[in-house]
Length: 265
Image 1 (tube, rainbow, N blue to C red):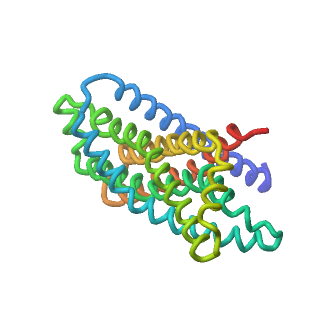
Image 2: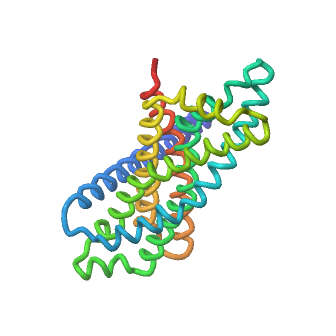
Image 3: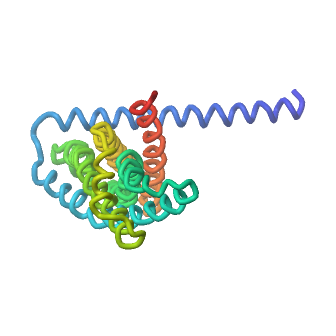
């Protein structure tokens, strides 16, 4: 075997190894999610833990989501007005801001913001518990750590992200309204009328559906990498990074797939 053949074999071996590793990782994540959802469906239900996560994930994420949505809505209105003026289509600002936020910007921005905040926090907390052997203590006390720790976080994030997205959509559209009326000189009544005229129920349903899927992705990535963190401080940092990066990439990929399914011609 000459050098070229050896080099080609090494490339194939590296690609094959990475593919097998990726496939194994995807399978492990899917099994982990299914296992967590099944365990969340049967008693005992740790209601205090669910309430704790509602506050930590839902309420505490509201300022980040609200500020992001407001400034993005205002910037979107300015950009659409600037671009629309080239085509004499300034009147399309209200409808495009509303539809754009409901279909795309609202759920995606909310998902990415919550991923940066929640997924990292979940991964860091669970990874620290893994390193300090607190997860082993749960097993010693006859308590399933997946049911007690992962299930509440996954369920709460999946249910509460649509709520945060709905609030973010309203704030974002209001940000576009405020900039359009105060800065660009739009008539308030005509802007509101044009906004509601072009919004359809399918836009709202797609926005909330995307948010629920993103919530499942965010919490699952945080829990999975937290539970499977390696020992030591380096393992905690690596688990946190992997959780945020994986959640962000999967959110963007899932967004495309869901858009393809919901709005195909």
